[in-house]
Structures are given as structure tokens and as C-alpha cells.
Image 1 (tube, one colour):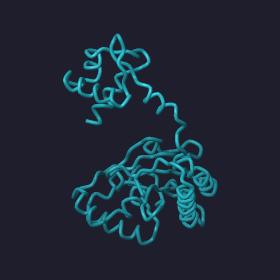
Image 2 (tube, rainbow, N blue to C red):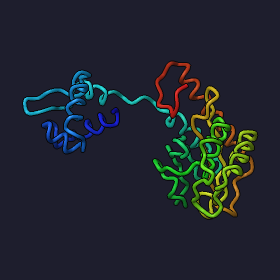
Image 3 (cartoon, one colour):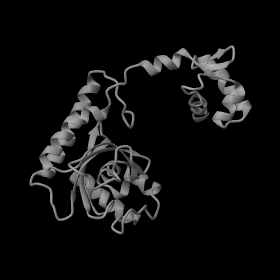
Length: 251
């Protein structure tokens, strides 16, 4: 029902500030009876207001829309990610887990980044990426074994598709604190990653990518670990200060 309410709210736009019941029904693609019930509830909440010609967005929604956004975890991470990029002279990524995929929140490329798959907002199978492995390794592996399909998604011939083999790799990732992939997401590219651990949860992950045959500078693995810890500490400090953040999971 919540998704239908958002469908109804999204029917309003700059060109249609006031809409009739029939117009909302057509724009939202919902049954008229459903729209009628949703309108009644949304008017009770102040999200929609009656108008002599129909309905309009209510003051409650305008107040929410005018609120300054809370500083998010990505903003806290960028200084540390930039430092890692300067050290490695390679493209750096920052991502969160969504189901069994990763969503990239930030990408700091160097020159003409060879990867278009990992653009900001892109969603990729977690098993094919270093950030995804770092995140999944800190999930409950017993539950993960029941959730993962027997055959995992593949982006290249090098992607790990066997569930049991992948779970064994996750055990090693958790032990070492680092994840890696070599041409599993894109031919010619490899990545090394680490999780951002806050209150015992992997809330995000970072990675540095490089071209096969052009290894990362000496000390990169330590720098990746230190960067992950630095971001986690920054987030913990912000939480201790009582600030509001958009996190991928609740603590």
C-alpha cells in the first residue's frame, strides 16, 4: 500500500499542481477505489489537500521537501576516499548492499576511467565485485547460504558462479579484512576492497581498481584497511554527536 501511495504522490508534477480524481487514477495507474482510499488517508496526514478543482499536494509534503538533507555517509567518506585515490592513483569506489547487489554511491575516477559499469547509481551483482564480497562476507553466512542461488550471476567468464566456492571465499574475506576480484566484473580490471564496519555491521564498502598488469602501489592494502577504519570512525563520531544520517541499515 505504501508503494501505491507514492505512485499517487508522484502523479503530481509541476504541470499538474491540481488534479481531479479521474486524472489521478489515470496518471497513477491504479483502480479508482484504491485512489479514493489513498486520498482519504493522505489527506488525514496532510500530504494531500482538497482543492475546489480536485486535489493538490499538502503543506506537510512541502515542509518535508524544504528540509535541508541530513549529511549522509557518503559525505563523511569522501575526504578519506580522496586520500586513497591520491595514494593509489587509481579509481576508488564506495558502495552499499541492496539485497544481493551492490549500489555505487560514489566513484572517484582517475583520468578516463576504464569502467562504465561502476558509475554512480549503478547496480551490480555483489558476487562479481570486491565491494560486494566485502559486504556479503560480514553477513550471517549460514543465512546467506540459504539465500544465495546455487548458480550466481555472471558478468564475465571469471565471475564465481558456484555458491559453495563463493561462500568459501567469503570466509577468507572475513578473516583477512580485504576482498578482491580479478576480471570478475569487467575484463582487464581488478579491484581490492574493504568493508566499513560500524557497530558490528558492514554498512558500506570501498575499493580501489586497477588494470591487470598495472599493480597497485606498495602499501595499498594497508591504506585500504586504514581508509575503511577512518570512515567508520568518522561515522561513529557523528552518531555519538546525535546527528542524523542516511544509512543503508539501522543500528
